[in-house]
Length: 259
Image (cartoon, rainbow, N blue to C red; front, side, top):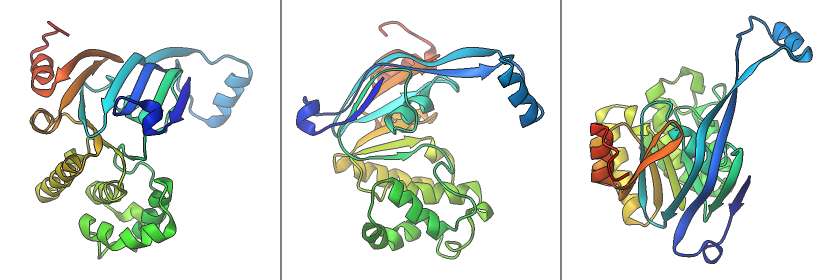
């Protein structure tokens, strides 16, 4: 298992991202324990039994610079796990990942946030995690607040925010980082209609500017209209890949012919 951040010349072929033989395994305990003490005792006695669950199975994938790749599939298919591998939040059990450039992940509502910190403090925290200097964060701060529409709440603790407010803040931070690769996991499912439309417009601007985008969504119309290519994941394997319209058609009809 290895993860590499490489230069464009090292990756070659105008690729932004390359995955070879990626597998991710989760260990799930058989029993639930009422207390930490009970769990610790059984662990020390080696009485805990686990099931191994392969969330991803030998995934190989190449994404070109400026491409928008849609990732679709049912819940539990491995979509979010795949994004976490690319975002370097999760290390695969085996396989190799090559990444060219800065990655800005927007994985899920509240990911990377500290609920006891204010919105302002979380902007600085997340900006730092994305590799921005304090000076860069300060120069972007007002634009982030304005886009998220949170000026009246920015100094309140995040635990007082609604899920939609947290989502807006996360999207505003991730999409203001000038990333080479933008990862979006179902962000458009949260928030009101006007913010969803504004978010879609920003994603389209990123596309025009040549940013590579990985886009997970259950909104098949958005996937068809925005993505260059699509992969269909199911039980940790790629069932189909190709043009957005064709793979979405196969997914909705359950047709694996040609996949």
